[in-house]
Image (cartoon, rainbow, N blue to C red; front, side):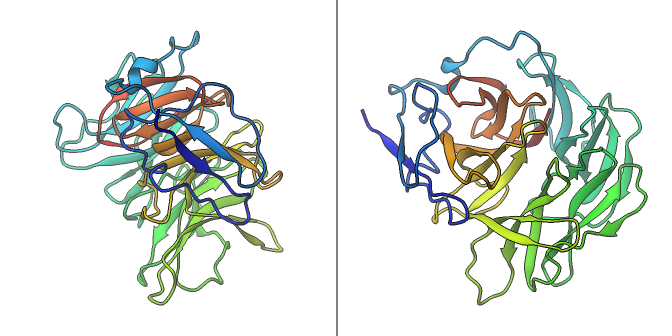
Length: 337
């Protein structure tokens, strides 16, 4: 049987997924090998073995969870001309429209910590609505990132952090209350010239992590995952190169993100391996899926990880051992739960 290997180095160095593993073929021909992954020392390979020829990923599905939880998905389904927002249960049932706008896209939804509000990008602007679809309202302009990335809710649910495009081609982080008041710049990493910031994530301790990439012509075009404080004295730390799509569990503070190899353009829509780690200390991480995944999100209780695969949205156990498909679509912008 052919075996692929993913090799992970400790943080603050960088993540490098062996060629062929980050892409790993389609979502149908790469699965995580049986057995719970273990923390492993620097440079230890983790085997990722494909199933038998012709076996499809969804045939590895487990039974749905005993308690279903709502998910919110931005997708273009059933031949529709634009991306709409949908809600469904995380066992794949109960799919229904939240928006129905044929002439404008609604993208990258993000659910508030209390589960009552949904932030999303609509027509290059940041909007918020109730999770039942009522009271949609615009809260910020100028979020026309390409591709757009989700806004991040503060731990209290009062603020949203978002990436705002700038005239020089860069981007900075801003914050705004969910009712649209108090829009202001976040004083994080402002001293770095030619830096394009996106994919903000608000950690439980109030600090922010984000993806940063240089816009300077003479700079090496490799992005990285940064952590940055929101309180003086400001401090920035490069946590991992070729790492993006971070989500932080609300309870334990565990991280999950996508790591790509040097041959894959970094960015929110890039497919790669999924890595789980306990923040920056301890700095070791482990692979829970060997490739073909992007935009991972923790479940509210931290027991499962959902991600966008090449054929739709999948949910797996936090140790990467069990997996199920919940939405079959090749045109998903983002989701949250």
